[in-house]
Image (cartoon, rainbow, N blue to C red):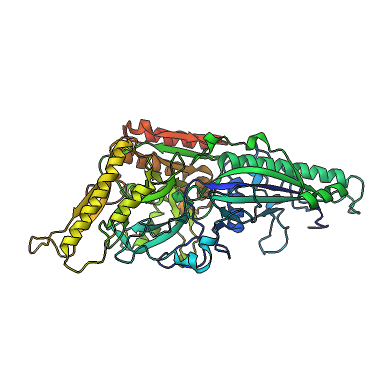
Length: 637
């Protein structure tokens, strides 16, 4: 970049980010008993680092590749503040031309050798988690009561310890401190040949709870325009051109704010498993003017001049809900369903009165109190849908299932449509960095919220005290006490019309030689049933048409049929039809009578919404999907 980088204006927008789904931002150190922990700063505060936040914003505001639309120039009108003959002309950023929001003129540029280019105009700060009770009018980089002291130093790392010591059930029954905005979930991969857990693929992950808020701040600079004759900055005409540059920046910020407040964005890991969806509320816009004395004094004394926020940034209370709007060039599929029996994703607590618990998440009820919802994680649902998609692909192609799990996953990407929908894991042995799929699957939770005090009594009753070996009387008393707590829970559910009923079940295995109970094989579980057809919220998935197309465009000739968008959407429609027909059980114990579901109303009850900015090609793909889903083309009658 020739010339100089003289600062003329600096605009700052601040607000809050709210995690509407659980969020995982991986840290660099391993936890004690937890494989993947969330990142913290030097003060132990949970945060979204600015590096990851910048990448997520660039992704959300426009990807620098062909979206399948008309070609878009990503170097708008030489707005970088100096000459650059390689910079082509292009339209200014507007909400109507959203792809230009990701242009390198704002985010900076670097050539393939790592030198040259120019620095980013945009500065993004770390987004630090803020306390639930904090007024959100503090400084973006500090102030207020951030979640800090409870997470600092060794105390933070100690909280990632084992979930139980063999005789104790932690307060949350999941190994987390009830004062932290964290959950800890175990994850397992399923072997496609055996149907059981894949060897060596059990891991645990810390996740920031939905509802956690973060302070957000973004700055963008306007540089002084160079005069045409490369003379001094005071050359006539340079000031007016600087003002024009700033008008373009203001248009960019306006369009960015509208895009973020309308649709939010995703950040962190495992976003295709429903994690990391963030809603955005912007509450302040300040402009610092360094083109004259008065502006400089105002910037020094008051931090600039406040601007009136655009009306398009306003978000009503009714819109501040999870999954507020369908993102641009996405479709959202909503599947109403209900269990036919017990459905749960288990959380195992060895050494307690009840070894297997339904997975829950801590949340707030309508009155602001803390409580629990039963949940089926998006990762579990996505794995179930992928397994069915692979099954369909293998039936069609007559492909064999490899013996080893990692080879199963590699070979599955060769099946029609699987790679485009579900992506692939990185494989260093094949110099493959992996690929994110176009399908995102979100957690599914119960509508009712169980009061935390009531759930805590059940958890407390499940704790097994220190008893002498063979003291069956004491053991039976503990089981009776736990059963009474479960009865109280069911009484509450009936009075509150929660649509749930819990069964405390004790099971054992039979010794094939003696015909009696096998030694050490007695176990129990707390299994939830739905007594109301709307006890569980609908399953929600989204498909990113941009990513579906980019996977196809990036594929070599041999992979073209595996990533074809039409093939991928047809495959997913067939998976949904199998779900409706009852061939796809959910959760734990599906070979033991658990997990059976139905979709009342059949495929006609499945809702399909499209986000803005769909092209004609996107619309054609959507038509293919809906026709296959309804059985009008390629599907069953």
